[in-house]
Image 1 (tube, rainbow, N blue to C red):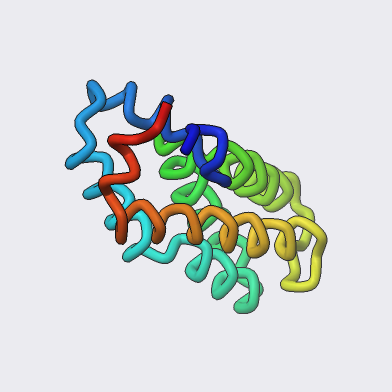
Image 2: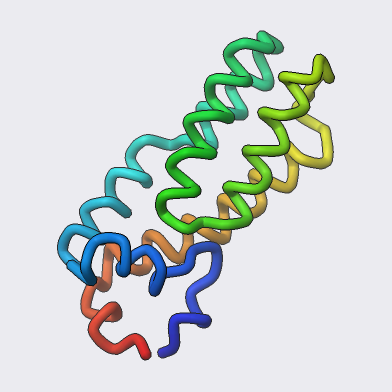
Length: 124
C-alpha cells in the first residue's frame, strides 16, 4: 500500500509532524474519530445559529489542518468564511453536502488505520 492509497488525509505529512511516531498518530486518529467534528458542524448548520456554525467550522478547520486532511480543511475554512461574511449556511448547501461526503471518505480511511495500525508500517 502507498500513502496515496489512503483517501482524505495525507498520512506522510501527518506522521512527519510527530516525528513518525505511529502510536501517537493512531491516538490522534482515534481522538479525531471520537470528537465527531463533522457531526457537530452539521448540527450547528441545522440549528441555524451563525456563531455556533462559525465555532464548529473553526474547530473542524483547525483539527483538519493539523491532521493534513486537506479537503476537510478547505471546506470547513470556506464555511467559516461564508458565515463571517454574513452568508447563511444551510444543510442543503453545496459546501455542507461536500463536507459530509468528504468526511465520509476521510473517516473510512481513519477507521481503517485505527483498526489496522500495522498498515502504517507497510506504507511507502
